[in-house]
Length: 508
Image (cartoon, rainbow, N blue to C red; front, side, top):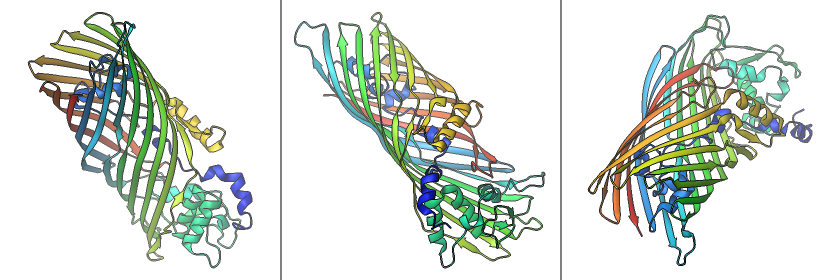
């Protein structure tokens, strides 16, 4: 049946081949405090200040604050510490890496006539907007007293298999496991592949194994207690290259435009070991590994302005458009079981390449205030708002994407961000500090909690060259389900990110 109706089924169910997750859509919609050491030292509260290459990425009018051409480069060491609680287990893990996360230059052109446009600037800058380097472990005994096996990974395969014909989730005569896995994915999609893994590994038992039309299944894993050892490993980052144009009008107004080219590079692997000694189980051990590789590129633009209301007081306003991404994904899977049927290993050695899809992230509005104490120091405040419920998979006419978008509109919400920073100068030295608070993008406020962060920085001016160093840290809690289907119990993660950033900037 699978091969006889191949073209017909592909036409009817092409959308089911998609495997996009809501958590991925949110990941690519968020950005972090990155950039120069001075920018990070003020916790990113730079919207009304300008005069910094990372401030240009925040508010495009910021490059017009430069009095002469300017360039900067930044390196950073990022340390992530995760404390994970999963039932009776508590595990700590740490990840540290070093990276170049910013570089750019702005070129200032002064007006040579009596035009009210005093100067204009052209700038180009690279900035890492999010770091995906992360690993965490969840270990514990998952207990369930309701007589079901929903606390086992077996429930994952059962939920996918329920209602599907046996001949759609099994090998044909003379067909290898790899061939069947590939063909089932091509014809029926991701959900059937998962059911196939569950059946071929003996986790699932059909009510009538001799009936191709069978759609009812039971589990060879009995209810009870399950020892879980779950690992999550991720690498990669989001970044953008900004092409900036800004101008100064008269003495007090600065206007700017950014055209941004975005890219995504993300890899993730999760691995689960499950053991049980439950009475009646003929499968006592399961190993399940999933890997995801994501590449994407996108476009956005920003419009911004800064106005000096007085020599000391400045206000800024920025509009960030949605980012329109085009994304490619590939996955691989591995499953092994052990029990009464012996050790069963299913390694399809097949890379699932999914159709390219599009993602629209929400827009953002930011307002900023700053007070500058002559050449002695400053204090700055930024506020921004972003409605994550507007995140969209596209095309919206696709039934799968439409369902996902409806879910996101219900579970995501608008989130505000508050940043405050200050700087005080003593001769060639600059002392800096900042604080930021970001609301959860989830309506429940638990799946991802609020973020609190602070920063401390020091700068030294050699004249045309400046050297800056900053330490910043943030904390946030997560309630992360191990899987989105079946085994949906969550691991609670308390995450602390800390960074040491060093920047060299100079006038050209």
